[in-house]
Image (tube, rainbow, N blue to C red):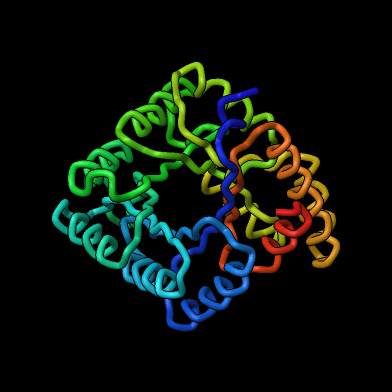
Amino acid sequence: MTLQSTFKKQFSCEFSAPKSEEAGAKLLSAHDRLAALGPAYFSVTYGAGGSTKDGTKQAVVDIRAKGSDVAPHLSFGGDSADKIEALLSEYKNANVTRVVALRGDMPSGMGGSVRLTYANELVDFIREKTGDHFHIEVAAYPEVHPDSRSVESDLDFFKAKVDAGANSAITQYFYNPAAYFNFIDACEKKGVSIPIIPGIMPISNFQTLVRFSDMCGADIPRWIRKNLEYYQDDKESLKSFGHEVVLQLCQDLLTGGAPGLHFYTLNQSKPTIRLWRDLGL
C-alpha cells in the first residue's frame, strides 16, 4: 500500500478561462451539467502572465455564486505583489477557499524583461498574506517539466512547493500509468506526503491533443498516436477509441491507489460525464 492510497479519493474538473461573454456562457453551461455529478470543486485556468485574469476572476465568481467550490489558478506573471495580494483578498471576500498556485509563463513578447516568480515563492507569499485560509494546490509533472534540467531537479522543485505549504498537487496529464506510479515512488522517497492527484485529459480531437502535448511535454504513446492518426477523419470512432483508452487509464490509476482524478474538460461536458459514469464515480 502506498501513502497515496490512504487519502480520501477526490474528483474535480478544470475549465479554461473564457475570453469572451459567449465563451463565459458556454463555460457556465458546461458547469451546470458537470455540477450534477458532484465534483469536489472546479478549477479555472489563468493565461500566460495572467493574460486571462479578468475572465478567470469572473468565471470563479460566477461558479461560486452557483454554489460550487472553485479554485482559481494564480501566478505572478508580470504583476506586482500588491496586485496579487489584492486579488487574493477579492477571492477571500467571494468565499473562495482554494487556489492553484503556479509559476506560470510570460506572455509572448515579454521575453526576459520580467523575472519569473516560482511556484514555491508564490505558495510562500499566499501563506504569508492569508495564513491557512486557502487550500493550495500545486502542479506536478510525472513526465518531467519541459523546462527542468533533470528528473532530480524537477523533483526538488516539486518538493520545494510542498515544503512551502502546498496542501495537494494535480499532475500534468499523461497516458502511461507507469509514469505516475514511478513519480509517486520518487516523491515518497523525497519525503513528500501530500495527495498527488492525476490530471486526466479526455481524447476527442487528435490535432488539439497533439498541439497541447507538444506545448506541455506530455507524451502520447506511439500505439495511441497511431490509432488516433488512423481515426482522425472518423470523429465517432476517434471519440470511442479515445474514451476506452482514458477509461482504462483511470481504472488503472484508481486501482493502483491514486487519490482521485482531476479532469481537464476544455470547457466541454460530454467526454468527462461519459468517463465519470463509466467509472461509477
